[in-house]
Image (cartoon, rainbow, N blue to C red; front, side, top):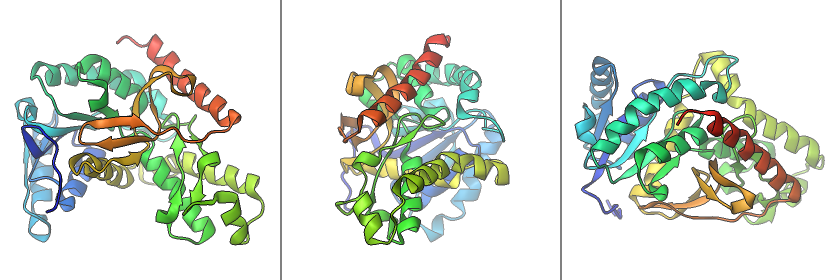
Length: 321
């Protein structure tokens, strides 16, 4: 495999902490990806981790060789990436921010175990509310800021591309647009920088026979923001989409792709925002977050982004971390 690997002890080893729907789906997605030769599953319910590992392992003959097994915290020391999905599930009618106190408490039991083993790899936070928990993980883990990142709005951005692709009857992979801010109710679509293969979005819409731009943008942004609620109402949880997002982020890191992804990372003055992890486009490679990508935003979008950050910052300031 022509892959450039990260410089750490075991660059083809991943650890997933939390074997609920998201953790198990992520393990399955990573097994199929061929990125790793070793995947360790950790859960407070060891039998659950064993069951998931055994079930997924039975598909290995149809994929690429990989060792998947249940383990403990001592197995994390030489991993390239730890994927932290452990946390309470979002219930119907519940927002991601409603999970704050429950999941901060869970993180307070997990992160010291990571820290005491002097872990030096990448820590990818997937549990919700992901932006707040990324900030919590950064404060407790002691890892460098670039090595602690959240899945952020990578999935929301994929949902936006999917909706725009359907709206314009064009391949979603040709759509270049981001959802930014909180991975949650205050997120926003960065319409000012959106384009389809370099053509300004409004121009491309008109080329495809769509002229009511404001109405379409509001509808599509609302559909993206509410899509998780729609899925949870119907099947009680979301996990396949985020599992694919986890795989995509891991690809960027393990292959040192320098991909631009809207992960959650610590802000230091960008767009007037300080001291909170927020989902914004960044270059992602073997060292985690390498640098920000300053996309074009209108004054109104900048204001909405700052409000989104303030919502998260206020919750962090009130939390006991």
